[in-house]
Image (cartoon, rainbow, N blue to C red; front, top):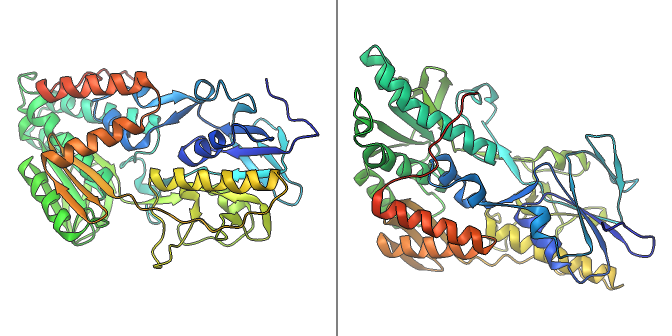
Length: 419
């Protein structure tokens, strides 16, 4: 076990996501003792979380234990726990178990959570998708919806169970909608006796004028067309007004739906508010250009918790590539400080493109002006996600499962348990 020493500075990294893990790994040869704290024991490849929620992959396919990933990095101690307080003056963090860890440097990279835009009462009826627990709960609700429909005693009850509504037309919403439609129309074919799963309604609700608003309009249009070909009802231009256990209200119309999924908004982790520095409207820390906290050059914030503006005035997007870049940037700044140098170089985000899958053989890719859609974009999306998965086993398992699903439409992780 690595124990911080008086002769080497102690770095505490809170969060084992993309930003925190990439920062930690980039400091493997640095003369610093690192304690990585996370309330989960694993690193999660969030871009494929929807595949777990829709029974295409098992949880272990997209997650790897942090201790295993960092087992060969001698200057790291992984600590399972949750940070509840930050004393920037005393340079210490408090944990739920009552422990307090002192630090010389601190990196906060705790990501984001769901935002219901002031309507947190909707949360029990419209769960979101940020963690493995979220994905497993969504998978349970989705699969059991068909079981409840099979047992329904009235047409109205059956139709409510067979209506799936996804709120939010970003990449997560689009991916969920397309995959749900494929499950209903192909995976579950011939498996029920009293219902026809292909008659399930999958609705994608977007308050704005188009889905995938971060993509060029031409690709948004193609994505919507691909969704419609899959049988998804794309409803844009009006926000959801209410959600309860029986369904939702939109544009003054109540729609019975027993399965509503939230993919519309995120808010930064609450830890940002413990620093006593300005936050933006989403609760993200407004950091210095080098990602340090104003007035505290020994504290850095990275990933979805950091509010960073690009030279063109646009915010750095809350996506995995941006978080990785921030993590590596913070590592460079920390290495300079440990070596007795000062590196205040501003963080510069490199936009390598944007991509989203719509369904089987359907995706859209915006790659620095190169716009792809359809099968070619799907192959590009597949290759990119396989490349960035951590660990050979994960890549092999995911490729095998996807190949099987491609040819058979079957999804292998469909077991649910009573709760």
